[in-house]
Structure formats: C-alpha cells, structure tokens
Image 1: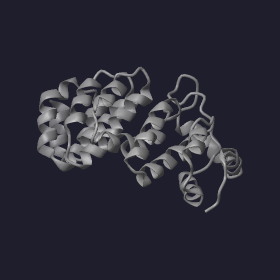
Image 2: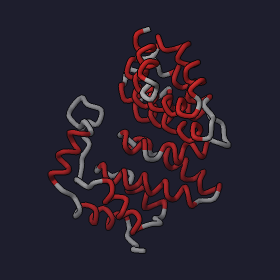
Image 3: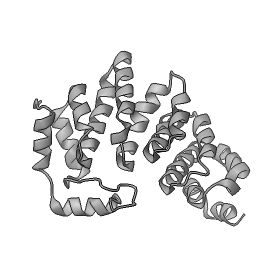
Image 4: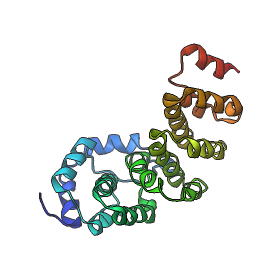
Length: 235
C-alpha cells in the first residue's frame, strides 16, 4: 500500500491526464454554459485508471477523502466517491453512519451523473435500510438536480432486495421534474423493478403511464417484449 495525502494524490493523478481524453469528457458530460455539467473541469483520466489507482492507494483516511471530494477536477471527485464506497463497505455501523453524513454533507461536489451513480446506491441506500427513509424524500424535493438523482439511485439498493415501495413513491413525486436526467434515472430504476417483478411494474404503469414523461416511460419498458412496449407507447 502506498501512503499519500490529498495534495500528493492530486499531483499524482494530474500526471496521468490526457488532453484528448479531457476534451472528449468535457463534451460527453455537457460542460458548456447552460448544460448540466457547466464549468466542470477534467484532467482526462479514464475510469479503469482511476479505479486502479484507488486500489493501489486504499484504504484512505476520511479526512483525505473529504479534501479530495472538494476538488475542482471531476476525476478527483469521482475518485473520492469511489473511495467513500470502499470505506463504507469496510466500516462498522458507527463508521457507516459517519461516511453517510460525510457523503451528504458534500453533496455539492457529487455533481454529475457518474459520480452519483457509482455511489448513492452503495452508501445512501445501504445506510437507510435500517433508518427512516425520510431523507430520500427531502433529497427528492431539492432544487438541486444531483440531490434528486441521489434519492432515485439510492433506491437501487432497496430494489435489489425486493423492496419497491420507495422508488414507486418517488417516481410519482418526480413525474413533473423538469430534468431529463431525472426522467432517465427514474425510468432506469422502474426497469429494474420490472426485471424482478414485472406484474408490479405493469400495475404501476397501468395507473400512471399517462402522467409519466415519455423518456421515463421508454426507459421503464425497455426490457418488455416489443408488443407490450408498443401497447404502452400507443395507449
């Protein structure tokens, strides 16, 4: 194991960047003015490299991770989120509580879909299994796109356990959400419900498909047989 502090990790990762990869990432993650990732900065490191460096440097202390997650660079924030997931998986109950609160306290830096999607269902979801689910609904009511996406993706943990109640409630709450990234996330989670209990998803769709944004509906029914997909899309 290599021991490095936050500044040393930052300097190390900066040496691994590629201008070409950074340019592609800035377009892919919509960083132009007015887009969802406006102003974000990229070093140009691909995810497998980030994961490999994390493996070499782990486990990291939480104070180091807390500094890294505040970085101006996207890849460093992603690195920190993945490090928090690893710490959470190693931690006891008290440690998991600390990591959960650290994660949400730094939500302003968990600010793109890849950072949310690699971490929310591995920290927020597992922690809330034995706690009140009210934080999910507070997050879902946030004015911040990424907090709302955290609420949705956190439910993936419950869905894997056959617990669909929260995602179905949140879905209805987010039917009128203005952001397509939320429509896609909700549709994705509903599709995961359908993989495990198609009858439950069909029952939900039969009641609510008319209120659902089209993108959300398309994502939700993506794995349905073609004839059934057309049934919902033409109804």
